[in-house]
Length: 163
Ligand SMILES: [Zn+2]
Ligand SMILES: [Zn+2]
Image 1 (spheres, protein in one colour):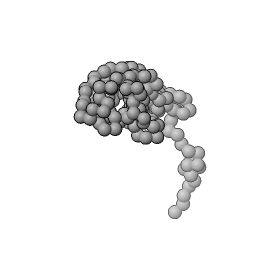
Image 2 (tube, rainbow, N blue to C red; image 1 turned 180 degrees about the vertical axis):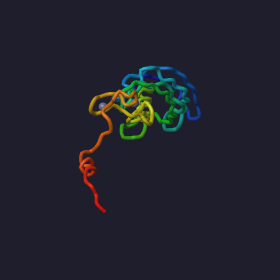
Image 3 (cartoon, helix red, strand yellow; image 1 turned 45 degrees about the vertical axis):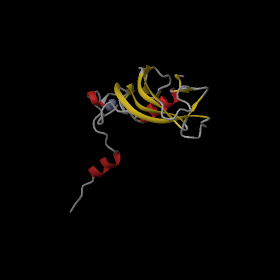
Image 4 (cartoon, rainbow, N blue to C red; image 1 turned 90 degrees about the vertical axis):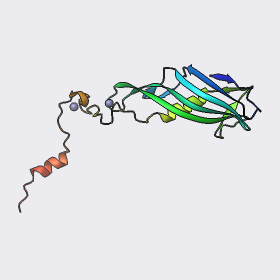
């Protein structure tokens, strides 16, 4: 949990405050991605009729593993959030709760950052991946299995076609 006290903003429409913080968030990742470094938040908390609106950029670095060749690499990210925190928010609504005058930034950060992560991260768009037969890294020329020829086409090659 990364809690912020917003009691100064509740029921004061028009009031706003800027918050800059760097924080490490747990469970920020997927099978092939890890956000272990702190995330930087430069957010504005604005009092609105329904509660508190949080908006601004989140940025940081994510450590990935390439989905094709498993090589580790890092990439920076920057996502803009604009979310409503409301007292009595339900899970179904597209908003986050205000609990006892505090908001927890963690679910919002996790949603925004994990949603922005590629489902299939690649070390480079044309990564050749690993050979399915020998396991060698094709990017490094470790595989010498030769072209993968489908046996049905080999048979066709042997047919002599007479005009
Ligand atoms: Zn790769
Ligand atoms: Zn191979």
